Length: 271
Image (cartoon, rainbow, N blue to C red):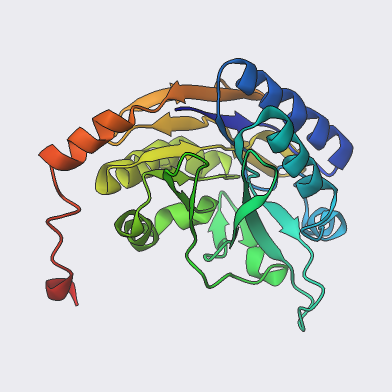
């Protein structure tokens, strides 16, 4: 299996974001990718006002395109995440939503980000929960070939218990569409990705945003693919591009057999 993590600089210009995503997905598939992961908020990213204005329902233009291109190119596509407009929400908030689309163009799984990015980083106050409500469901999908695929988004990466649940439930691949800030990409991104890969003996496909999206809003790029031994198989350059690598599932099986840390867990002791 060959996977790609697409990296782009999304802004409030939805038409340009879609054009860039389309170009990079097609390029990755020409390079042999059969599983492609887009970054968090690939369809629109910017100020809180930009996010609200650009939010869509799940049958909107962004995911309609995702379904069409997955079907056309016959790939598994994790459509990063979009700002989802939730019409029935009583408090007016939306959701940060990732959808896995199969090669037939049909949704295989939908995941809403569980952990809200309410933090102070680099002097900027981020309050994701002001506009979006957290999800409450852990979501394990599977590729068309039957490989377990765990769906997560960005800030989730700091919560290892989520990834352990996905691995125990059968995930061999972990998708991490992200918009990691520039400071946290520089200091934490690779360390966290490699840790989640090693702990769960899983491939991690992490697609990050890169560059300036709005005044004072920058992300750090370095989209990468990490193997179950914690080795970085590929990393994108600091521009709109993609990381691509072959995933050796037989090697993963050997790692899990030779160093059976998942099987050696003692949950009855942990409480």
